[in-house]
Length: 471
Image (tube, rainbow, N blue to C red; front, side):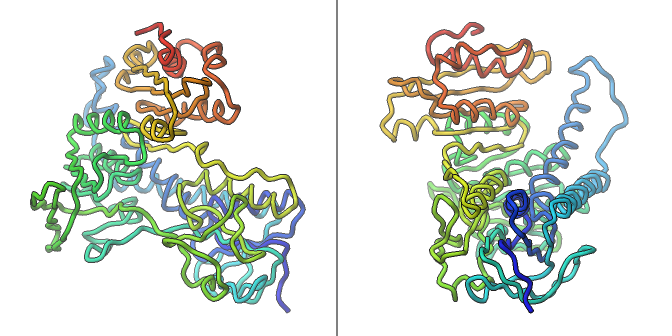
């Protein structure tokens, strides 16, 4: 007889496990099906291990520049095996933590490959690596099913990753050695984060981006600031260009790069990282047979994460952009609260912050200046550079910028865009402000602690209204 649940979630990533815990809190009987990595990609092969690598790179960078801080550091270098070991250890710790949280909340884990055979019915086939206590292959039923299967790296025809010469982020997270030269296709978050890491580790890095600017979803001014910083570090950047052909050698690749103005050049690198986006894991789930609507590799949902088939929901990367862990987590809560009959608030994607952990960091929320103008707003724009902030100067991190965009008629904060040290921690202040519908007057009247880098946020708001103090 099939085991029965109020809610069955396919995928234990940030969306899946958060949805499961919230559902358990609301008194639902919950099961989570996972086929490979407890916790999904984020803690195992994404967000967390990547940040561990970047932290090692950051510390190495500071040691290299010890003299700038009046310090002496000698006989230091990179132990890439040690760096990777630390990162993988942290990934394991986070994955085990997800398992602990599910157990604590009495969520049953089912290990295997799930297929939805009919509304309310899931068949699970066995896969390897089942954790202790997990249920296995079998037939399961549920009143509601959430698809939270995440996404995988997109592969371009003729440039398919092989884990040797052409890497995905999986391969780039656990290198056996640091390549002397590295070519990166794509300058989104994944591309520039690996560019920062490998440059700090000693690689000669080149980024090729198809669009006219790097970090294509960011404000143009912020992206240009970041580009100059990358180039100052020695990272070579080609925008408006594409890798049209790759020839593999014994231990390197030769790439043909075509630019938008018709020029062609050949680049040789030890390794190539393909960072041209991700595609939702929608295959082999039974969605097509059930008539679940998909679009460009993702499941189509409404504001409460419902698909067009009653009783079937989707959250996270598989449900479309922005493909961010925190978006998946929030969708999980929205979806479950809707299922439980609570007053769930549909996701407002303009309120979702974006964070890129390159050096320098980039963070944003809301409309860019260009998109605000395209939307018909008359805008007031404030800018404040880190060089005018005492804490940033004392930290040796004086190269940064905070940019704020307001509706000139109402004072509504439309967007905030930051580049510089620790801006991924600062952006949440603007996220809260936008969620609370804060006006420029309230932000101007807020007291910011001194000395902090967050004072740049206050000064940027003041600057938008001609009131900046420290510049």
